[in-house]
Image (cartoon, rainbow, N blue to C red; front, side, top):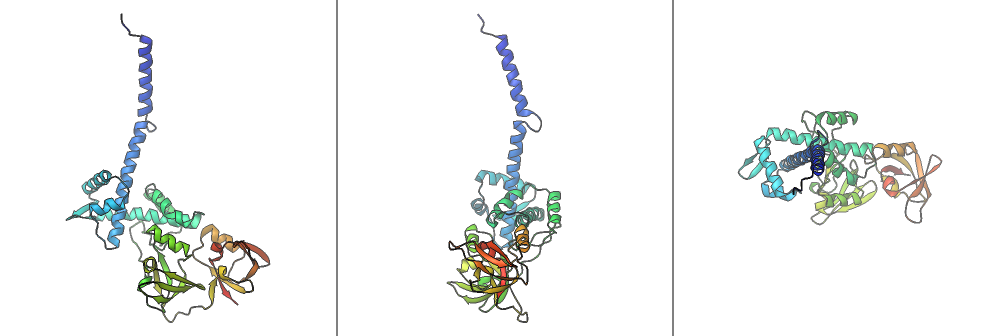
Length: 340
């Protein structure tokens, strides 16, 4: 006696058709989604390798496969396969065991760097995201924007030359400006200069710089420089850094004939019995945050004083143009004053 059941057979047939349709339907089918995922994942690995090689070459360091595997968080096999494909496509080549960018590979790497730095600038100028988030968010977007979208973003931002850390942004033709200045540990005592660049990697050092409230664009004077520590004055405060941390700061010395205004400080340093005149807002304050401070009356020439000190620490209330405005220390540190 046969166990064949035509109804069950028909049901199984239709079920198989449905599964195949779900799996292979154009664009939305699982097959195409998975294929796109793996393709994108491969593209991301290739672009990350190009960017790493670009940064290594720019800093004068050589990279072999062992180093590449150590710095990238991918499976070794995935990196090896990506390198094979990149070699075939003439993006990179080997010189002995050292990986090097070809001209084609360097152009591609510059496009990735351009997206990353433009997106960091966008996050700094147009959003309220913390600067600790800029790098990771830009890392995601650098793999998503095409050339047209990148050029539109650059136009919207006014084609900036530098990102918020002071890194130069490549133009659409691959031209790139130079970072002006010298690493802070290389400057002699009594040097006066402006912070032009703050390196955001490695993250552990960058976080120390953020915790110190050190701002790009700030005027500094080197007070002490030895193998143990580097001390500099900036905007009414003294900063003490280990040389390894100070090396992440680039400073452009100011010529002696340039007159530096004395007694500039940060609003956060103002005491209860002091009054001051607003000199300006630090370049560290951007976008909506900067506009808000200006709208609240913190404009050049305005007089300011302490209206109320918070016994719990912050925020403090400042009297500006007859209005009491509460600001946190982080906000007040970006307003420059001259005490009377």
